[in-house]
Amino acid sequence: MMQIDDVSWGRALRAMFGEGMFAAVGARRQDDWRLDALDVMQLRTGDPRGWSRLVKAPGGGDYGPGLESPFGAVAPGDLNSVFLVARTGAEQIMVTLQGEWFQTEDIREFDALEAELTSHARVILGRFGADALFFTNAVSARENPHADMFSREGVYEGFTSHVMDCGVIAVSATEVGIFWGFTID
Image 1 (spheres, rainbow, N blue to C red):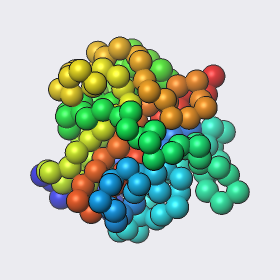
Image 2: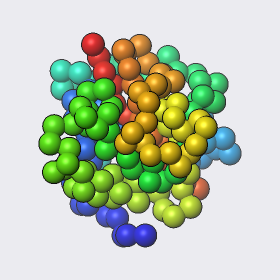
Image 3: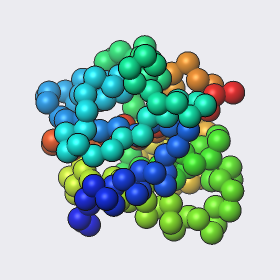
Image 4: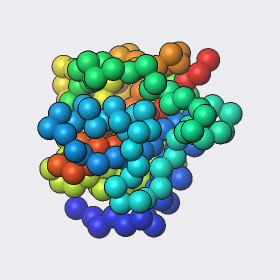
């Protein structure tokens, strides 16, 4: 596993996440990681390492005080509808968040950018260590957590009121990360 620091983390986060996207990490404090994930989704906790997060509302404003998180209505039971996905699949999903409909064909110049985007996704998820588990709402992972997520069907168990949302939840023994994209119209 590569060594990740706040500089490489911040660079990868800025390269992968922008307007209408959500990337935040919180501490793992409870036996049930879903409760910690919910705290991160609803911005009730900060990054335990003090590293940056990017939680940008459509239009470019930050989610945070005075702005509801896109996950404001999510309840702990909703997180029972996520599916285990292999690390490679989680990296692929992170890359597809760059496309409006979360598919590689919606990423401009994908062939030229694939290696760079995958490298950034690998840095972001590398923070969670070799033993981390990854979950997604991409239904393709339900039957096969090792499926090629670049060529998956565009069906998702959404968590928000947006037209479509997709992402990855990273879970380690000490941290939970939420990396999500939204299609707003």
